[in-house]
Length: 415
Image 1 (cartoon, rainbow, N blue to C red):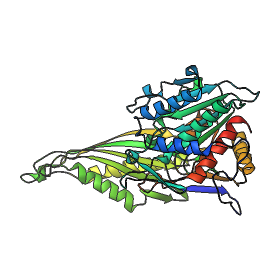
Image 2: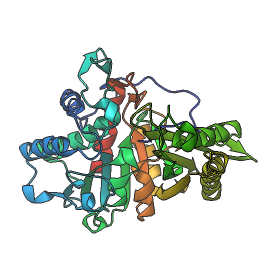
Image 3: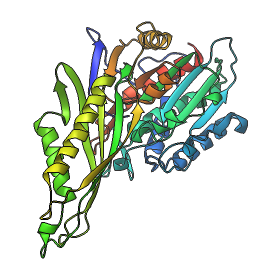
Image 4: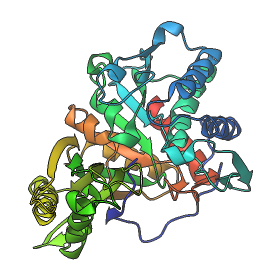
């Protein structure tokens, strides 16, 4: 999940403390097995585009629980994403045993690179990575475990359920690529859809921002940095002036302009090979986000304007300047579910049935539900107990995680 601030749009006056098993009922899930699954999943390396080992683990667990091989498949999303990929999205398709509309449960397989090498260790109700240099990977192996544990419960206990489609998406962390390129014909027109990602299990993300990514190629003129620096045009200088201009005028970071809000970030800069050469080329990757599509495009225009102006400011002794090129793509469009969207109402009633109070929120980061909703399947996103995602301080609250598993099981079985 692209983590960012959440805007709560409805909240409880009080909230009860979550306790593993506190909402136990005859239909409660096996929390011990669920925790074992998530601990194993978090230890498997699987950054974006390298999710095959994670998917294989899930497939093995499903088959061991009794899932027919014919019910498990991969789509060909990996052939349509702009990034290298080992596999497509993993799906488990189950015909219903009750006369209810089809339901879809989703989560993403990949983690951010900082989580590769995670060694999860448990201390009480918390899990952290034993390696101080890696994140835990609970974002989003906890979501993967919610789906996996739900499916295992259904198989092993032969629970009645409506038609179900489980989908583990690839490449969420690099622009929601798996959900964007998914083979929707395999979904079977779900009537209700639920996605699991970061945060509290009682938080319902009903909307999220939209985002663009832009690749910026800055071309200068190389020359000897000691013998003839005046003949060069530094691509680094051009980029530095542009970024400084964006910062000074309030178009980088948290952006508030004329009553509008958005964010932008220059996140990757690559270039240069030696200190004795005036750098002639830089590759830069940046992003712009806003719930307002028009303002988001304005942020992009300001980024482009800053780099074009910077090109004009830097010239060599002969008056020559550099060049700049942009390649911009929409990662995901913003969305906001209706207040009475059935998936939201069912999730809320399920949470209340477990003695908790749901909180609706709108995210300033993207989730797979952005593309699910764009594909015509309104989807609410729930958390799994993750904290401080995308950092080495990431943790997983096991009380909240097991609550998420209980919620997932009830939503899948129709309880």
